[in-house]
Length: 393
Ligand code: NAD
Ligand code: MG
Image (cartoon, rainbow, N blue to C red):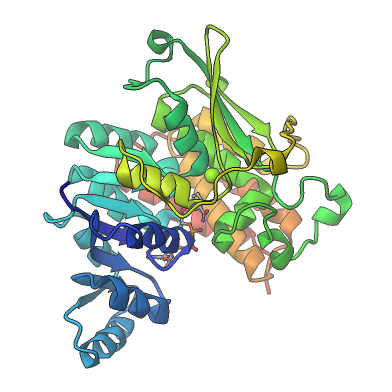
């Protein structure tokens, strides 16, 4: 077995930490070449001690100097770099086989796309990158011969439930629909009147999954599922009508694929991201991930509901962006990033997140966005428009 050499973008986050947990269980299989973190220097320093990469990347030059001094004092020969360019640099290193894309938000787009363009095996957790630049991404995957493996639990489940060698042609493979499951988040049953002013702590207390703060808020608004519908559109070449969202509060069925003959294939498991991470890291082989075996007797019940678009207007906004196409998904995503950050900073009530996104989408005309420059321009314009819509302090 040849050792697989890895770059982990966003190593200090929730997905990054779970990735390194799986990697550490298989030292003969994986070697870490580069780790990146933004501001969490202590976590990154600790990861550097354990995995001894050749490169570490942080957000600022000042932090790079601090981390380099710490590592040097301990006799560790690790090159410490800083900034967005350095992220791209470690994503395309010739000695790297696979890149875990686990930076949160649009900041992850340039290095993730760079890894694709370099023909790497790309393990995609950073759904925002695919949402805002879907067609560019998929064209680059084809052109460069890259392999894109989904880490998002739903998309990983769909990938596992699709026929082997699925080409994106639903009719040829007899696939009729993708059923994307959603837990419904912490506010599935909260009275609508109370939703307006829930706190960041309440929004981040997900009933089934432990995740970073931004995706936790996205799960509470169900924008996460909206982004995932767009992500599924690109990963599996599905039309909006071929993707249905199903609320499944137990988060045991991670998603399903329906076939024309009436068969439905699903992937089940405990809600632990180490399962899709291990699946993608070892694909097409299977490796141990440290995840407890699923105990169906303690699960006992699997329930399903239709999503309520009045309760979750962000889901409807995502469908609107998907159908509009062009720059609309980039605008949706950027406005959401601004609104969620403002909510987490207590500058915007939870109940106003959707309104900020909708008003941003109303303000920016839909135009084609066929290259990275156009996508990044839409992202920047939407951030300015959304910021102007926030309550003034
Ligand atoms: P997180 O907030 O825990 O970690 C984010 C990582 O990105 C950190 O390493 C941070 O240092 C880095 N980062 C943040 N801003 C950056 C910037 N401007 N430049 C460079 N690096 C930056 O987030 P997470 O929960 O691990 O999620 C990461 C991605 O994976 C997101 O796109 C999320 O939607 C997706 N995802 C996460 C989960 C989950 O269970 N956590 C599940 C499915 C998909
Ligand atoms: Mg998901």
